[in-house]
Length: 540
Image 1 (cartoon, rainbow, N blue to C red):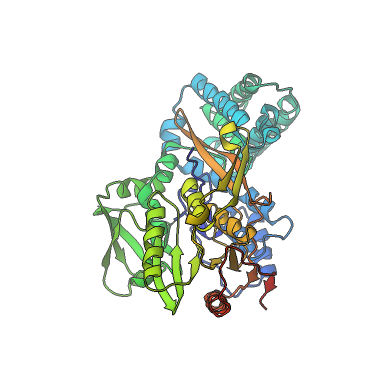
Image 2 (cartoon, rainbow, N blue to C red; image 1 turned 90 degrees about the vertical axis):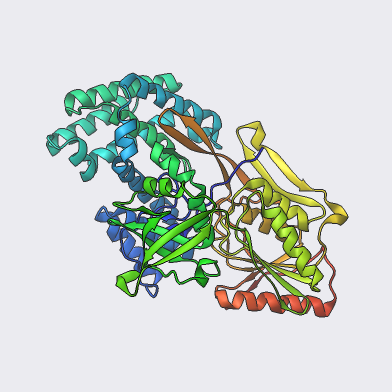
């Protein structure tokens, strides 16, 4: 088994978050950033106002930011999820591959596709009770009703219908079909067929496949923020390895109107040490000029990478001449290896892939050869990646003990991963830096080290991406399904909870200083783990 948890980051903004979450480096947000000095309450008021105005993408961005500030605030995640569903719906109908390939399916084939998706969700989704056909059908009704109320959907598909006609049909939906008994995917298919044909008759909807796709997308998108139906174009963009490399390099890209721009240059990344700045426009990728860019066009341009990705830029606001940056098509996951002080080593681990273990071994061997006695392992900004390399990285530092437990409907995802490396595991003191963008596999490593008292964690509460997704291909796209959850060694869910560090320190610059202080303390005390006990501390 080699499940690949899909990383999410609140800072993807627009939506490197599920569905049209085209990869963790991609945002299609077209709004300007919010002033960093705005208070929590002011941001929440702004988000609520944007919801009322139907500006779903901007509202989603603000709710993501609010959650990164305080994930315990009641109702925030629910509001974020509502906005996300609206955003995914809007993007779906703007997606050329959806218009040209999915909506071109024969009606009967579209109905078969809907039934197939319901069947897959029922059998694979992590929560059986949430994926029963009757509930999935109901969430499809919700999705279609939302579409009927959306001005953009009406302009595309119902331009000739009056508001009264649409309202009457929505009432008929609730009264005649929404309460019908559903036992399995075949019953759901029958009801969706009736609704689609009624919409074609009463609303003069030319293509009834549109209705079927709303029900199908609604069944997926309502389960959680990771489960989603992916159009052919979205699947191409998510599968783009070079697009992931841009994120690893430290670049978050976004579509603003007809431009592809740099939305963010991450701190402590390789990109931060280049001349690339937020707001700079990417005008060519691998010599391909980007005209009216879409995620699919960007992914296609990146597919041509042969060892390197060449990006041609124009500076923001025309401030200076253009420039070109060449990025390796496969970046290292271990960067910044250094000896900070006598005996104190530092390694920044930015992701997990097949090469990670060898990179980690090489870095540690180099540091030990230079006299390292304590290691600071920086997991800040690490969105995860491949599951097994994350578990195997934990085995490098933990001689024995539980690393993580996965639980789901399918037997292959019900397993406890335990380290048995014994005396071959590294025994030097370990200090780990984490933040709100430490997610997925990085949280597995962090929680295993903390709960086995193998390391001291410093920073802020991690993201809380404690689930596994798999792709199930279907005709005209794929379904990404959450199939399992991660649980820490003591049985705590990582999903939505994250990992709380031993020492809470919100100021990024201070986090490394504290880690060095802790490392020097261990050197002075002559400590020799595995046991590293530390009571919870909160920095002001």
